Length: 395
Image (cartoon, rainbow, N blue to C red):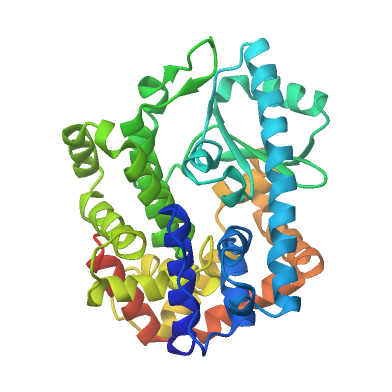
């Protein structure tokens, strides 16, 4: 990570200059623009960074080949944002017309806090709906030309080429999440959007708490990206003075996130405000900058192994074996989602393991072997380092 210090520091500086409407400083002489592009693209921020680069004098900009990559990503983001905006408005109108209770989430609302909405490129669009309306939603989405890519569990995934991906959530987190009980009350907290009878929204406070829960989920499961911290910072900047801090504090204490929230807000001030860093925030920064947008596979595996270690001797070999057994031979409850015939024929669980294994080897061969290599590479030092960081951040 130290070898990328100049690039990562300048990336943060450029983002800070954009969200603060300040002119960026010229890059350091030793900056490697090609590596900076890789980091920015890894965090889905290369499109945003392009706006900052164009504020530099020509002699300080990247070489042509790298500059073209930044510009290509910005053009893609502009096209995708326009398509997503049009599509989501169409979907929400349709849901409203057919009396589907719904609540748009995350990026759809956050992107308007950025200097330009296309700066916050969204991988997918998220909408909460009521489980009892699943079949109605499915019929409507298919009728609008979407293809059903995944059905069941926490959310259904609908896609439309070239780049529309909508996740229809029946719940906001998995049922075994520590925040599941709290988020089950989301509909009770929701209020109708002005002028609508079925489209809902959360209060500024409740949406802020949801953002922090979402950040904590990714941070604890494998890491998160720079943009998640920027989202929180921008939300604080825009809505901080309007929010009931006592309410937020009470709710965060209920779900034991007050310490984590404080650290994430402070890190945002270090990166995009005027606060000074310290050893802990430098460590969190290293973790986040290594995590990419939605966490690295290895970070997620380390966290899962720590969570799955059980009691007794802490042998790293035994811990990894226990984790391998869990992911390669899931229980009946999980496998029944993938193979519904198990509801009627549970004794065929071993057969479903074989089917799943063949599917992974044929359709997801590269990803499967990456997971195997990542498990093999985990050391006791990795396990202790990530566990200690989670404890220090309040998780």
